[in-house]
View 1 (tube, rainbow, N blue to C red):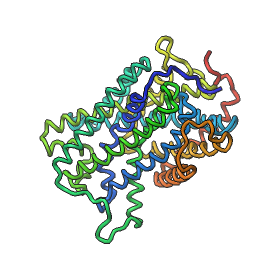
View 2 (tube, rainbow, N blue to C red):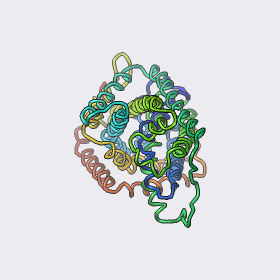
View 3 (spheres, helix red, strand yellow):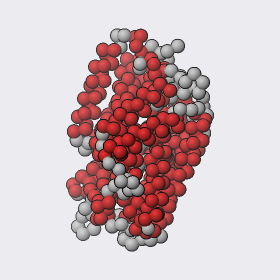
View 4 (tube, rainbow, N blue to C red):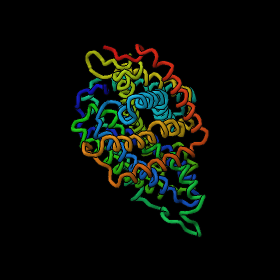
Length: 444
């Protein structure tokens, strides 16, 4: 059987808001100077364009699967259906297995980034920052411990804060431009040089991380109204909208602060940008807004990930305790508590620089690439007649998506090795535990 569907209460506006606040967390504000630092020619904008293109072609995969199988858990169910009875159980288990580590790492990255950006306003020691990051995870847990229709309304409010903050940054920079941003190579440089593509590879590991979340609505598939229409629309609206905002924000900030100097302001680039334009009070205000954005993203991330172990457990393919719903508020509270608990621990143990690349390395093979292959398997088995959304120019988006993910996976370096090891360990755990069927039987 497939994962149990819950109440469909989230409309298109709310679904898009959930995606967008997941995408725009602390990530773009932290990685902007890092991305610029990889390019010695000022062509850093192409790493953001490459990240948007990656999200777009992968978004076609998510849209086709999400519209056809709108169930709680997203990728879990896509793998479960695409790879057949035996292979599907293994692949879906591996996804939940890596999500149980990768999800809390994402939660930790948002909370750690929040604490680091807070130091622009308050001088915090290392352990004080850890207390802030851990406390933020607990605060978001408290916000999410309620009915889904209330969460949808909260998402729209938080999403509005995200958009207004970025628009303020964009308008401020474009109205005070002091430097031009190169879009084409100059002085004998070329798009076809090794140096350019090495910079794109390193920069795109950071920009793709900043775009992740365009698919969050698929994890909530069982709670989306008219999912066959609203899931694809919310995915592409959020990708296009955030891509435009990211590109304009980069051009805006770097037209005031020269890209060559951006690396000197790694932690607080946008805050220093506003301070340079309007004074210290403006820097404080934008920092507060960025912290609200980071909290909003953490809110959406935890909401989406909490549905994944629940879907697997409800399907009898993960530990049965995760299939429990709250007795009165009807949401997967055990899954929420466990993921937030691990996220709290990881926020105390790791640094932001250690988790960004690890997050991608853990997801590329088991989730993104396997999902692209799953689309091909489903089309061969079932055809396209019953697909509410059909990707254009099939199979080229699938092929391009897999090539891009391989390109990025290779450039994660040693983290790729750890991702493979985690998958192998998960495979061993699956075959060792599947003998005890009572462990994975859903709770009645």
